[in-house]
Amino acid sequence: MQGSQRKIIINGQYIEPDTSIELNLMVSKLPSRTPIHIPIFINRAKEDGPVVLLLGGLHGDEVNGVEIIRRIMEARHHVPEKGTIITIPILNIYGFINFSREVPDGKDVNRSFPGSSTGSLASRVAYYLLHEIVPQIDYGLDFHTGGASRTNYPQIRCDLHDPENQKLAEYFQAPFTIHSKHIKGSLRYAAYEMGKRFLVYEGGESLRLDEYAIKEGIDGFRRFIGALGLSTPPFSERSFEKSIVIHKRKWLRAMESGLFSTYYQYGDMVQANQILGSIADPFGDYESLIKSPANGYIIGLNNNPVVNQGDALINIGITN
Ligand SMILES: [Zn+2]
Image 1 (cartoon, protein in one colour):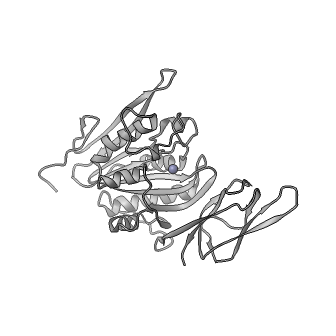
Image 2: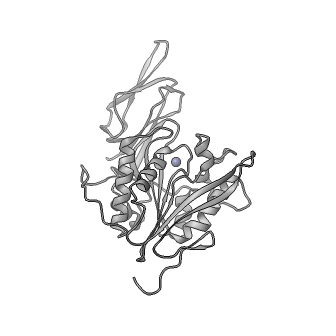
Image 3: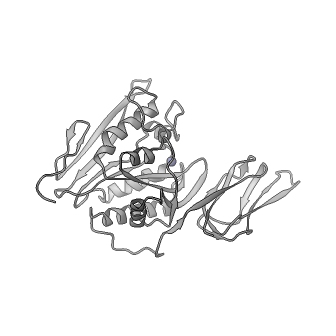
């Protein structure tokens, strides 16, 4: 470990061992001239070790990730005993201040990778992250929540065909580990092409804090960096032994429009043919029942009772 120290250079700045610095990356200006900066915190220990990126707010309205990182920073868990942690609590500042998933031009940063320095705003943010930060890291944790009034039960998503990902997901040990193929244009895919591994954490719902999802995110992060040797692993044991691994999932969609209600909560175990909820006509004409197609768990749930035909209602993590 001693001898030649690894070189970490971000934004043209050499990050010395045993330093803590904050960089403010200028992205562009709002039409009002207000400059938009992305704050980046880099904590490098004296001793060399893995470099981990902790990323929140890629989708600006997914506030649970922002809160997870805020609490990690408040407790100083982002300061490693070995190696380096790069912390970006809010990547999509535009979305964060506008309560929106996207940047102002309506584009999704997480579908804009690898990005371009002269492209759309989303593509510029993607380009910067991929060219300035990702080359410096070994691993990334990217914190998300369900979108559009859908809650996700705390889960890690990664491509489980890759043994390295399997190992990393075991380190994090979220309640569920879900096999998820790479999506073109996503950070996870672009980073994988560069030989870097990202775990995507999903927990809770956009624009709403979820204490359980926040707690699982913090605990998982601490187990993860503990297993990688960046810090002393956390003392407390989790209440269940192992992450439940899911290889297949299915969204149950609204067969008709109406008022949706469910009899269960996210995380509940369900059986094939079990009635999970219903869609009712607001004027009392009909009610249709929603059945589970398989044995599994409710890993995602829509919280908006007013639904249109085709809306995603219940995400089943299939176990049989
Ligand atoms: Zn997201």
